[in-house]
Every structure is written in C-alpha cells, then in structure tokens.
Image (cartoon, rainbow, N blue to C red; front, side, top):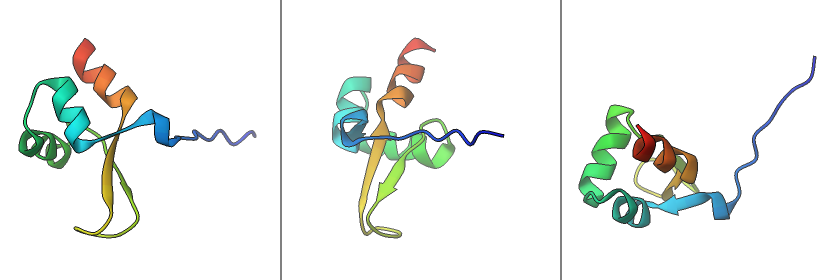
Length: 66
C-alpha cells in the first residue's frame, strides 16, 4: 500500500484577511464559515487564539465555484 500525502506550502495558503477579501466577505464571516465547517482552515504555530489561521487556496476555489 502506498501512503499518499498532500504537502501544503506557504504559497498555497491565504490569511483570513486575504481570503475574506477574495470572497467578498468580512473577516468575522470568514471565521464563522470556519466554525460552521463551510471553510477549512489550517492553524500554524499554537493552540486556541495563539498562532495563525490560514486558508488553503483550494478552499477558496471550492466556494467560488459552488
């Protein structure tokens, strides 16, 4: 069996601010989408409020093409 991994690089991720701008929504709405599971996010460097929340560009494409 072959183990398949997906490598996400920094260029494949957007900040909450950038993702919200691209989607035409507020940052608060972007966080609400994450909480509701409509938008998947990656947390880098910390737990809870520490660290950065980044959005894979593929998630933005999914929302825009839905």
